[in-house]
Structures are given as C-alpha cells and as structure tokens.
Amino acid sequence: MDKNFQEEFTQIIKFKPPLYKQRHQFVKDLVEKYKPKKVADLGCADCSLLRMLKFCSCIEVLAGLDICANVMKEKMHTLSPLPVDYLQPSERSLTITLHHGSVAHKDPCMLGFDLVTCIELIEHLEEPELKKFPEVVFGFMAPSIVVISTPNSEFNPLLPGVILYRHPDHKFEWNQAQFQSWALATARCYDYSVEFTGVGHPPTGMEKAGFCTQIGVFIRKYPQTGESLQSEKPTEVIYETVFKAVYPSLKDEKYLQNAVISEVIFTAQIIKHRLMSKHEEYGNDPERKSKFQPSVDCFSDYLGKLVVEKNMEPFVSGNEVYIPLATIFSFPKVNRLCGTFEKLCKLIAGKVTLSSDGSAVMVNIECED
Ligand code: SAH
Image (cartoon, rainbow, N blue to C red; front, side):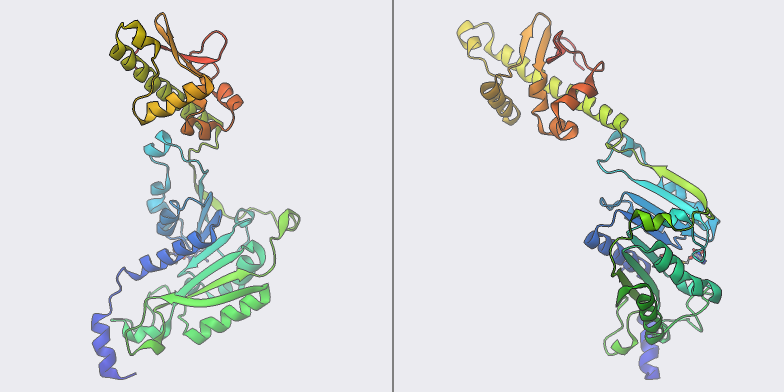
C-alpha cells in the first residue's frame, strides 16, 4: 500500500454512522428479512444490540450471553418493560433473558433459537475457546441462521492509532482469507452454507482492503432438528441467569381481559354520547324523534349501518342506556381483541354492568366516566 496514500486516509477515516451502529443495523436488517422468533446474542456485552432488537415485532424470545457479568449488569435494567408497556400491552409476547457463561460451554437454555448473533466476539476468544466455539454454536445450538462479525486486519493500516490489534483484549485479528477459510471449514463441518459481506466500506482506490468489519452469514442446510433430537442433547445447567423480563402481552389472559374491558367501556361511552347528543338535538319533537338514528359523523355512520342492517339499536330506558353487546362486538378493535362473541362475553362477565338477560351493556345516563 502506498504509504502517503495510507497516511492521508488514516487522518480522515471516520464511519458515519459509527461502525458498531452499522453492525447492529446489519443484524436488524437480517431480522427483518428472516423474521426469527427466537434470537440469542453471544458476547452481548452492555446489551446494546438486544436493546435495539427488542423493538423488532417478530421476536418473542431474546437472550444474551456474556462471560463478564458486570458488563451485562451495567445497563440490563434498560431491558425491563416501561410503564407504557403495561398501559398498552403488545399483541406479541416477549421474554428477555441474560445469562452469565462462556460460549465454550453448552447449556440447554441456548437450545431452540432461530438466529444466533456473534458480533465482534470470536477475536476475544482464547485458542481453546475458539476451538470449542463451532461445536457449541453450530453443533449444539444449531440455529437456522448464525451471523459472525470480526475485524478485518487488512483494514487496520487505514485506521489511525492501530498498532497490533484494534482492542487490547483481542487475541487475534484475521485477514479476509483467514476468516473465510475458518468460516468455510466450519460451515462444511456442520452442514451450513456461508456468505461473506461486511460493514465499513474502504475508501475509493483502497477496495482491496475489504470491509472494516467482515461478516459471515451462515444458513443451516438441513431442516429443523425437531424436539426428539433436542431432547437427546445434554441438559446440565451451567450458565447463571442474571436477568429475566417477561413483557406484558395480550397473549396473557389477564392483560387481554383488562384491554377488552377498557375497550368495551370506551366504545359504550362513545355510543352513549352520540345517542344523547342526538336526543338533545331532536328535542321533544315526536315526529323527528321517531326518525331518530344515531348516525351523523363517521363513527355514527358506522353505528347507523349496524342499527339499520342488524337491528342492534341502542336505546334509553329510565336512567340507563342499553347498548347491545352484539353492536359493541362489531367494532373492529373489540372484534380483533376477542376473536369470538363468546370470548367477549367470558372476558367481561362480572366486570361490566349488563342488562338482566346479559345481551346489552348498561351505562347510566348521568355517569360521565
Ligand atoms: N457484541 C458486542 C460487543 C462485543 S465485545 C457488540 O456488538 O457491541 C466482546 C464481548 O464478548 C465482551 O463483552 C466479552 O466479555 C465477551 N466474551 C469474551 N469471551 C467470551 C466467552 N468465552 N463467552 C461469552 N462471552 C465472551
């Protein structure tokens, strides 16, 4: 490499966005492409990748593993659900777990994952650990996809201040040929295919240096191992669980019930308000009152159609407004939450005031709630 050219570049190379963000974005794009449900991040450090992945709506199980418990513990609280997660539980379930242990050991908690990410991990492994790593990840965990990133040593001369390795804890840094031959041999041994790419483009004229971070994406060639084979695997627990968060989800009956009750009461109140405002508008004119249909704006248009088509008309009797449950069930959000009319009845039983025959929600005219 021309030394002057090289020096010129070492002054100016600065990745935008920063390289670690590009690596994490690469994983996020992969998640969006393959939609894995269960993702494990090995060597998760301060959990920054997990924090990003928890927003991917396809993921239901997220796990992190690191040999250094302290680095995980620093920010693990940021993986806990927020108040808003309880106020508006998500439709998907999400469990996040952090384990303390080494990728050189097998633990049953690492079975069943669809995607395993090893971002800037392997270069931190001592030789004996690196030897065991393929058997643990590709042989034991055997997910459908593995992504491994590691520094490309051919890029180092372009980085300012790098003498031997980019980080004092690195045990080695491979050039492109070294990484690719290790990855190809590993893929062949465990029946995976592998494709190479990277993040951090080299400057124009320096393309031979390759990406600053080299990445291998491994895809398992054989179909899902199935429960039978998984159960043959050792079950000895070695890792220590240091964090577990179960996010509130509508898949959990107690959160679903709360959501349905709120939605039923909200819908009933809106219908009541429409009804009462029409009542006042028509006043006491008996002719106009007889033509009364609660259908003015778009919400009421919808309600009006239901009333006309299905005879599900809300009515006032004494101090109470009666809103047929069938009408409430027809509203898209209630319908989507409950799925069936029977489920709606079951979820609100004893929680919402109903007419004596159970067919309508009763709302007091004066009650402003
Ligand atoms: N993946 C992170 C940072 C990686 S730094 C990111 O994308 O930002 C490498 C991490 O691997 C460190 O946190 C280190 O503690 C962890 N590590 C090193 N050896 C390990 C081993 N044998 N098993 C599991 N984690 C290990």
